[in-house]
Length: 233
Image 1 (cartoon, rainbow, N blue to C red):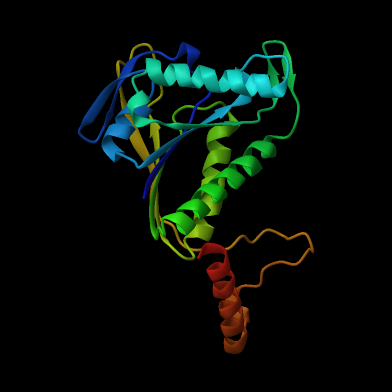
Image 2: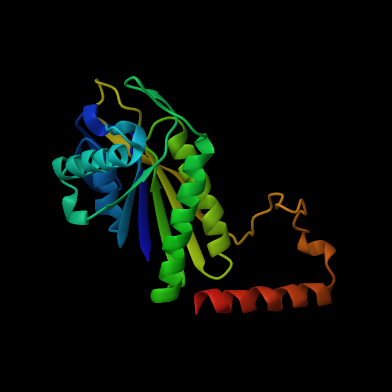
């Protein structure tokens, strides 16, 4: 299963250049076109932000933001790839409107969406191998960072039961004098399994396995795989 995720900010004023990746070139206003040609994913997700929308309430703003991205997908010649659009909450002041909240709201909602997506693939399609590609060329300030973190966190958990590969792209910086931009590989890695190690609500920290006895490891292993069998099968 190949999944391509791309962060997009406001594409309204993006300029047309030629993007190059491997032996492929794509003339357009986004690096996503050439990555789609190179990767040929099974599913493409564009992560957008509600601050690019207009409206009288949050739902209307989100709808307008999605409409804007759909229009640009058609304009950029990407409609044939049928990308999914996820509009997530942003914070800050844009065009006289104040979007209140925390930047981590973006991260937690994206984490939830990714978890539901991968759980669906595990349950319905019994997928055991995942190739995930992330394009962070576009996206305002914190979007690429938090999207990368959300993917990294969920893929480390997914790798406990599946084979997971991650590749991250970012193009050369855009300038008016550069008609050709190379899309660079930032990271290419086989993701290792790793459960979350943050402090949980009950303030207990996960204990590294090297401090556990063989019997404790065996007991925990049985419990984990029992839970996975219940949740996945």
